[in-house]
Structures are given as structure tokens and as C-alpha cells.
Length: 409
Figure (spheres, rainbow, N blue to C red):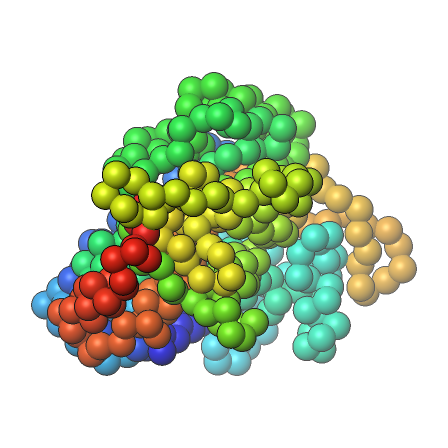
């Protein structure tokens, strides 16, 4: 069983993540994780924080000399901005005098940082979190609700991706399908993992020039209007074996688990597996993937409408899932709200924010898909080491009767 957990706040000293159940022998370094975190900071429309935010990666346990040990893996991502927030986010009680004005040129900024945030932002966790936990301001809520937390999940996702490729030959890629009204062509090419570097070099992580230009134009228009944008990202996984997940219980279905982790990403409001919502409008004769044998007798599906899952299990075809991200809630053109200290109308607090974080959402979505697939593989194939689980994987594929063997995408 694979389990993961993260801890830490947006402006805290560090984020910490743990991953339990990973076999020994996965080759991974801090540079690998730092590279994944750098990809998360890319994308046209990101805010100022991405320019100076540097992720300091440290493995605290579970890795020795670049190889996992089979024990729980722990990784810490340090916050380079911590000195500015050390007083505001101190874990220990702080004397009020620490926030008093002084000759220090940064004193006023420190006072501003610690000012109670009593105007909850529409679309954020602010107000409901204050109600639920009994806080009188939003700082204790927004610090953890922030998408900064996804850096910890991207770190674990990179480890999971290394495991998937080294043990089973499974590789992933993500790209941007739409930002606002700007979309990639519906008949455009699907990326493969070999396209990752090209996608990273693209300002919106799109596959085509037509789609890129349309999305960049949307971001420029929103920025000019003091607004924000959402969009749609797609993750594809290649090389999956048939049979990950299960049909026997709702919570073991692979597509259900994928939908759950994708919906767990901040600002994601919808998930689609395969053609999903489009398929819902088709007739049955045009909705499913018909099968045939090739010249070698291997079973192929003629189409990929199901997105690589049937009955809650992987089919061996390319896995394809999409996630829809709402526009960022911290809008430069401040939205109307209330102040919980009085009854007068107010405008929401706006500090720095992105205009669009959709390209980064694709990186996060890829990490979450990797974690779920790694979990499903550990459940299916077991093994205490990469070598052992790889042997089990090969034995399983060899055990499938010849007339039932399917093509693996």
C-alpha cells in the first residue's frame, strides 16, 4: 500500500511530504525533484512569486546515495522567503511588540503582513475555514489552503514517476488543452512523454502554435482587465498494463481514484476520463471502443474514447484524463465581499497573485496521476524492491493467455 501526506503552510519555514510503501531501489536525487518543482513554476501568466521563489529540496529519510531504501521517504522543501515571514508565521507565541514600528525599513511591511485578514475572498477557503475552525481572521486558513502546498505533492509525484518508469516502463506527460476561451485544436496531436521538453519550453505548455497563440491572447486580455483565467489540462500515461484498479468495489476503481486526487488539487472543479462528457451526448454505437485483432493476433481497440479504463480498470491503452481549473480566486480587480468585524460592504484583499496558473496545474495533475498509478501498481504487483516488483509485472503479463493479450499503448 502506498500512502502519502504533506504538511506546511504557504509562507511557513518549509513544506514536508512523506511517502510510505515505495519499494527499495528507485533511483532518484534531489536534483530530479528540484527539476520537477522548477517545471511547476513555469507558465505564462504566473505572478511575481514564481520569479524569486526557489525550492530548496532535502531528503530527510528513505533515500541513500540516490536510491530509495524501502523505508518511508521524507522530503523537505525550504521556503527561501522565510526570513520575511519568520515573525508572522512563528510556531511559538510572539510578543506584540515584535510588530511595532521601529527604525527598521522593513518594519511597516512586517506590520502589514501580520494585519488580521478579516475580508474573506470570494472563491477561497477563507470564510468557511474561519467558520469551521473558529478563527477570527483568514490567515490560518489561507496559509494551508494555498496552492503552494502542491509543491510537496509534485515532489512526491516525481519520485512516483521515477518508480513507474524504472519498474514497469510507464511514462507520463501533461499538456494544456484550454485557457479561457483559447483552445488547442480538437484534432491536434496528443503529446507523448518525449514531448515534455518541448512542452516545458512553450509558454502555456500547449502542443500547437495555433493553440498557444489563442491561449496567450486570452491571458494578455485578462491581465489588461485586471482579471484571472482558468482552463483545462490533460494527463496521459503510456505503457500501463491491463488490470490496474478493480471492478469489485467502488473505492478500488482506478478512474474513481484518479478523479478523487485530481479534484483534490486546489481550484480544480471538474474531471473527465477519456471523452467523458462528450461521450455522454453520443449514442451507444458511437460511444465505445470496438475491438479487433492485428496480424499477430493481439487485441486492439480501434478508438480511445474510454480513456484507457473500462470497468474501473486500466485496459492497457493510453490513459487519458482531463481536469478543469476555475479562474484564480485572488482577482486583481478586487471582488466585493464583507468584513467580519463590521457590517459595511468591503472589497476582497488582494496581495500578489497569478493571472493564470493552468500550465502549472498540468504539472500538479501529472504528479497526482503518477501517485495513484504507483499505488495501483504496488497493490497489483507487490514486491519490496524495484527488481522484485518488475519481475512480478513481467510474470503477470506473461500469464495472460495468448488469445487475450492486448496492445499496450
